[in-house]
Image 1: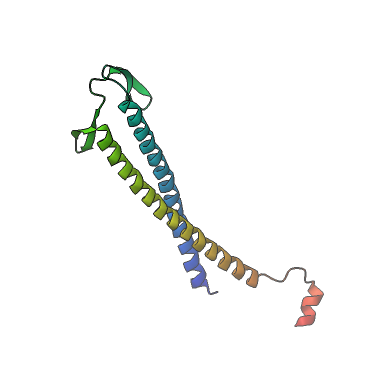
Image 2: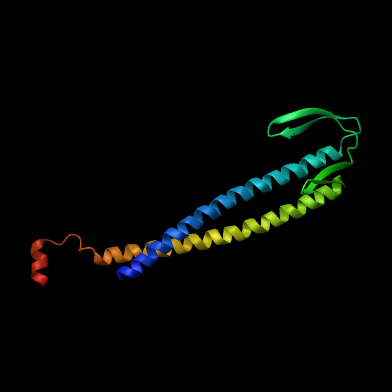
Length: 151
């Protein structure tokens, strides 16, 4: 292997290593998002079973809740972007979340495929570099005398 080929492989290896880290982070974030959506769907199921006037703890922020009373347990208010909030039935909200959950699964599957391809290419490069290193290394175990006899 020539020096320029080795340099190209090394550069590719570094770039693929960075991509690998990003895909790894993306997979972790997607797993968290999937869990959040699943938890929200479960919470909607529980809320749909409540009666008007039921006392609930409503989340304000991560780990902070307020004591609230349900005035309309059959509907939720959903932020649909840019500060717009709309009223949806529990079933409508669950349907939207289930669609989001499916889309996240598809994204995760594509990222997993990318992850597998990256690992395979990184391994190919490692093997090529290792083979080149072994080809250029002096044969192990040869004595000085044996080396002189072969010349």
